[in-house]
Each structure stands twice: as C-alpha cells, then as structure tokens.
Length: 348
Image (cartoon, rainbow, N blue to C red; front, side, top):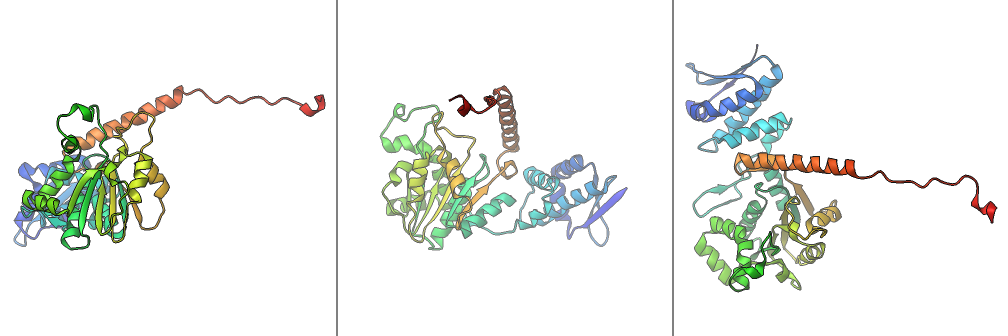
C-alpha cells in the first residue's frame, strides 16, 4: 500500500476540498482508484491518500494540492474545478496548473473578479497582452469572446486605448435576415447579443449606454469596417469562422496605430455556404509564425460551461474523425498510366 499525506492549515480548507457529502474527493477516488480520508490531530488536519499504485497516489495528491491552493481563492470548489484538475493531471500536464495564478483581469459592476479558469485561458490572456493581433481558435464555451471583452474593458479603464470596437459577420444559421421584423439595427442585434451581454456584465447597463452614446464603444457588423483605419482602439472580431478570406483580410488591414485586435472563432461551426472557405482557417495558415501575431488554440479541457458541453464536443469530434475515415476508405485509389516500353521517338 502506498500513502501520501497532505497537511491542511485549518479545517475550513479540508471541508472545501472534500466538498458537499465528500463529492469532490469521490471524483478523485473513482478516477485514480485510491482512498482519501481526513485525519484530525492536535497539530492540525491532514488529508491521507492510500492506494495500491504509487503513480495513481501521486496523481491524486497532485490534484489535492492544486485544489488546496485554489480553496484559498474561492468560497466553493465546484465539481468542474475538480474534474479539470483530474483531466490535466491524467494528461500529464499537472505541473502547468501552477501557471494559474490569482490575476484579476477586471471586476464586474457587481464586484465579481474575472479571472482565467484554465491554463489555456491563462495562456490566451497572456498572448493578448503580449501581441498586437491574436487569433483565438477553439470550441464553444472556452471563454474566447468573454475574456477578449474583459481585456478590452481593462485596456479602456487603464486608458491604454480610447475605444472598444466589437464586430461580427452577420451570417444566418438557417434563417434569413430579411424574414426578421424591424430596421437594419433590429435585424443585426441578435447576432451581436453575446457581445452586449459580456459588456453589460462588466460595465453595467448605464455605463454601457453612456459609452455607446459617446462613441467609446462601437458594435457593428463586419461589413461596416470597410474603408476605415482604427487608431487607439481595441478591436474584437467574433465568430470569425463565418468571415470570408476577403473579409478577414479587410478586417486585419484596418488596424491603426496603438491598436490591438483579437479574432475569435470555432472552425467546427462555420455557417458559410457549402464550398466557401473560412477566412479564419485561411488566416491561421497564412499568419502563423509572424512576429507580434499570436495564434492560440483552445481544446475541450478549456470549456467552462456545463460539464456536458465538454462531452458533446468530444462526441462530435469523434464522429467527425470517423466520418473522415469512412470517406477516405470510399475514395477510389489513384490510377497511374502504365508507361510504354521502348522509346516512342523510334517510331517517328
């Protein structure tokens, strides 16, 4: 039997790690096949981890130590945080959990601090800070847009930029704009709603409305960007997988002095007509390796929505791989023309 002992500074930290009805440690026990107990003594609490496999015990201890550090920064440890620690340690990336510091990007009007919740999100935020242009590519729920807006609000508050510009391609997903009632603004509002929601949470409805009226914040369809040069601005292009290569080039060349641009999108959710190339996919290929342009890829471990979202993404990825394999098997083998023996010139 192998054993690891982790000392706790007080009973409150132990209670957070164990969770309601010991739900947190049950997840760790079931995954790593260990037994986790709380041991009280005169010198303080300890968490004891026992198991037959030494490597599994070490992995469980690594999860507990990460949760121990996280418990001092939050009131409740969610099962999502526990599962993330398990996934990272199981993938051999447990050491990178140390990259998750306590840095607050900005604070909402309700006093809630906005922080990176995964290592991927932390690296994304660092990339935005270091580069002038950043392409954030990954599945839904990874915080691509939300964190970009948070960084934009922070830059505005710290007077690094004079305005925030948010834009999206107005591409329909099954419905036509012309079928919706109202004028042009009413028609495009549903496409820009996620951007409104993020700004409302960080700035409050009143401050947001004032910023709109002053022109400090501008939200518009991608088509409205043509012909402009954007100086002293933080520009975010959301849902960029629905931009054409021409639109993407147009957007990226709007960048002016003292400006920063963040492009976000999910290449698996393109709503462009069949056969039309995605401008985001093209940009990723063309811009890779250029200095001051960061390209960050999220994966399913960075999903911070309901845990089922991660499983749905994994299921679709598995389905797409299987579909691609079957199509490759059905594809006929290339035919090669047999060369004639001898030299044709001899027959002339």
